Length: 469
Ligand code: NAD
Ligand code: UGA
Image (cartoon, protein in one colour):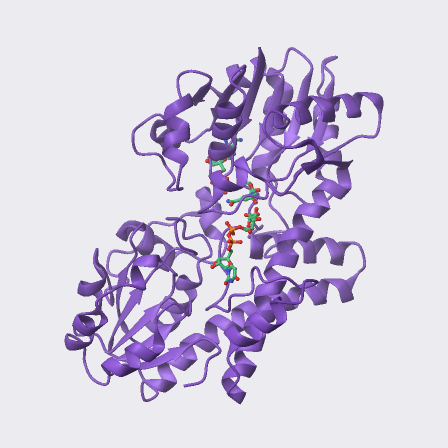
């Protein structure tokens, strides 16, 4: 029986390994993590992450060929294939701070593999890493090898949160990069045969190591660039009377451009787009390519601009001040169908409104109060560095309340900001909400999900992204 061990039981390691276990009943999959609470949650009824379809897959395989454990060394020692899916955050101090990827977690995993291994291993980079990381990992492993042979593969993950299980079951492609030697090719084949249990052969792409590593950063940069492009257009639409949905539709019907990923929004969030583009920018700078670095930097700058533009619009529309006014924030997660708040645009919008002394009442169906308060007090990039987390001062954020109902959040509010596109926000009883709000009652739709005509009929003043007033 092939044994797989995955180091890192997070948003990628957990779902990816669950699907491998589901599709490869003859493979034993163990997911290990240093976080005792995370592993306990994976072994409980309340999984540590909310992801549609995940519960069923885990329930089906757990205890049969899928296991979650904190006994990291034992399972790494026993495995034939080791996936490394630890976090690779942005560095917050030292060389490259604010841009470069922090590979501390990766390096400690690699050193541990070298320490405990007693048989040959295939080590798979699942985390998103800077191009050439495999070379560094190879050095750590071979210089501590005690005669053991390692093959390093790059197998970046392309799943999106909220659709992780769907994406894993039916991926556009699986990318495997390896050394172009007979041993390297054999390792690629071994990993390809795991995915080959359910992914059609022509969707499993083999490349060299550096192409695979760089393709992941490139794919995220291209995706984020589309959003910044449509968001940049949204500003021009607001200035000219064009409608960004009509523009995006017209542009997207060109088959060379395509219709997906052109929704204007309050800005993109999530743990990866910003981190990976900053990482790409840093790599370009280190390779003496400042023009290329500046090109990609703009994608982040437009995203920051979009978030502050949204805040400015709220404040300026509400007679240039929100001081003491109650603003209902509907949605805090970075997108619908996830409880993940990493780099969510809601953090910057809430901080911006608090900066103008607003009172916030926040509701998200999947994010709890502790998480929201923590997010609003953390410094940029610190969320992915567990060792930097500072305890929050109990007196801070007394302008913020977190509630478990959209009607409670909007009661007596002067304005509503919709920051996540949860389906339930489309079907709220807006007449009831209007009745209970201060007048004039404002709606700022950061996701373009409400029926503006209907809301205006009720009496709301509605602002959407990139739409005429
Ligand atoms: P995560 O923070 O949810 O999970 C990482 C886990 O690794 C944590 O539970 C942490 O405790 C554990 N860990 C860290 N060091 C460890 C060690 N030495 N030994 C054992 N466990 C250790 O992160 P994630 O969202 O799953 O992302 C992981 C990687 O995958 C990142 O590089 C990310 O860029 C990439 N990625 C993420 C997504 C996504 O949707 N979240 C998608 C594609 C790629
Ligand atoms: C993204 C990529 O889509 C995945 O392929 C990749 O594997 C992953 O990053 C990663 O490397 O972590 P994810 O961040 O989970 O996945 O979610 P997306 O659906 O890409 O959304 C990212 C952000 O962009 C969200 O805030 C979303 O609301 C926003 N978005 C997306 C828009 O504003 N407009 C769009 O048209 C699409």
